Length: 274
Image (cartoon, rainbow, N blue to C red; front, side):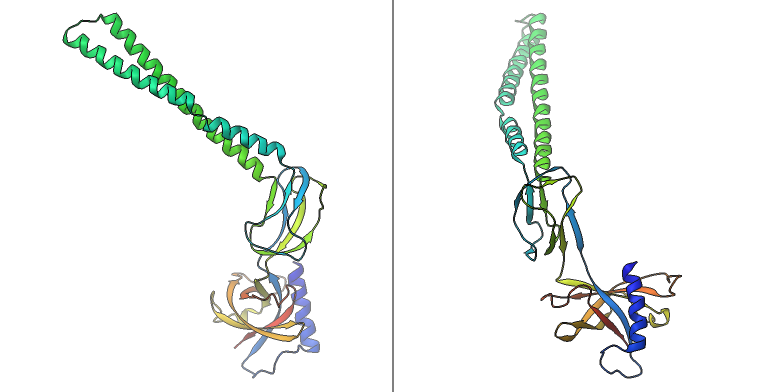
């Protein structure tokens, strides 16, 4: 809403005072707008804790997946180690598997003797069968227990992971709101991360100027920067399917590359339409 109001004011001001855009023939229209980052996120932890490590400072560029800061996690690390040790211990399961195989062979040989020569009693055969089935049941119980142990290990690892704040995308840290030893509450914003390598040019445009504008079409943008004016080429990423009833305009977003971060989000400019 603030961006929409600003663009409307910008349009009024540029209409009254003029904008330092290059002279253009009558067939060309210049639509005022403002640049916005593609991603601008306030990051927070999902659990409470005390900040134990900060790996970056304000102004640092980070890659996607980088650990920005960590909360105290000694207990969670111990729990992961405990769960891992339990899960990797397979002696009991292997013994049960071996016992089941031995009793299976014993039962099958006893069954053959009973069927061929009846040299063993029926009660003995039933006893061997019962021993085998009990061993199979114990083996399956331990196998199921091992599967539960794996799940519990993954839960412990997830709890450990939640003690860190990880960059969801590559960007620049523009605001770091905590320091070492500070206690954080769940969902408390602690870091602002902004993507600068790409940006949007956002404009509210008259429906009469949207003829021929389709997603993916390349357009020129003239943007004010510190050194003067910069011309960039971007692609239409979004064109509102409806007209805003208040302004009678349609929202347009153009995605452009900003590899050197020369264009700061919030810079004003004009979209060139022919």
